[in-house]
Image 1 (cartoon, rainbow, N blue to C red):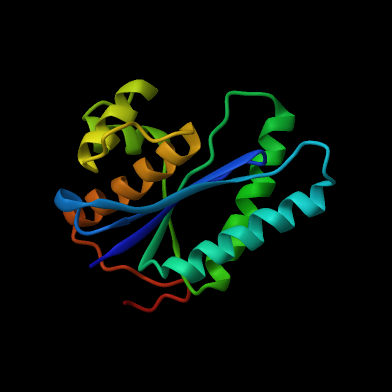
Image 2 (image 1 turned 90 degrees about the horizontal axis):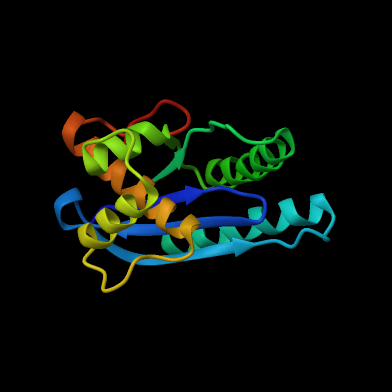
Length: 171
């Protein structure tokens, strides 16, 4: 069974979801959110994100990892903190020996709904139905992580891509 870890990095909340199976039969194996508090010094927040994501990687041993490419239409301070959280998430994945497959938000939406401009509620409904869940995933960061992982499963099936590790070797 193929296992994909999807990660939606953020300084306050980093969502993650592990999906198993193939794109048509994907199931949610585990999910969660890594939370840090605003009053905690930045280095400690980054350390917590890294440590908890490293633990997720060790516990679930995914075959591949997927993360949303960064794009922003918000304030510079939000951009900076998200990029820092993303950096430690990338580090944790690299230290676990995985490459990160990146998808921009429009591609994730297009792959899952057929529309690159799908609304969040539509995305959550698609993820819920595709994974056979009774309820929508919460919080949004976990739902987004599952959407990214599902996009990776579907993109790999459609493209027939060979997965390459961080050093260019195939698996």
